[in-house]
Length: 160
Image 1: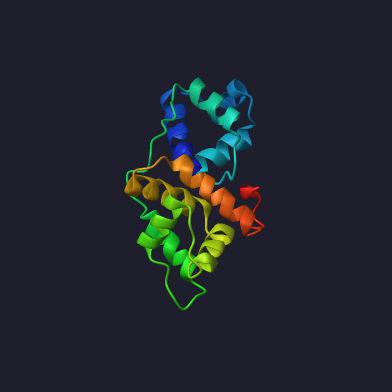
Image 2: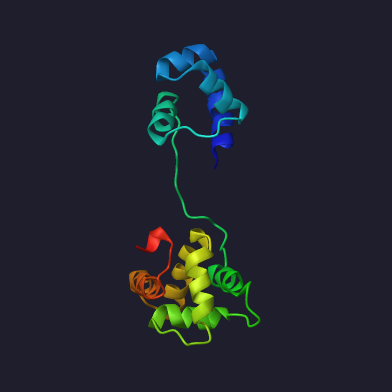
């Protein structure tokens, strides 16, 4: 669920409760303009504390759950890591390397590209899949990734 979808629910609930945008804004400590933009789907950001307070006031909950669709993280990571190279990094080879912590010379540049440039959501998904495929704890893979990033002098701050 995104902020636009939440805004639609807020607007419906506000109407169901017989509240004006102005009254709701006063009740939750936000501006009427913020409520208006939230409900129209044009609000870019609303802090978590403010959003949760607003939802609580309206008797709405936020439910978190894992995405139901599998993202095929290893395949996506392999493709992302291979964009600039003639040879393609195979997802099973990436999975094995993530799990065992060893990099062959042939995939070293691919993994460096992956760690430096891939969206973090893809890396997280690849770690989850590799851990499941190899029956190991994901934290062991994260240790391998951190070690590799350090050895490769990755400029990405997240690995520091």
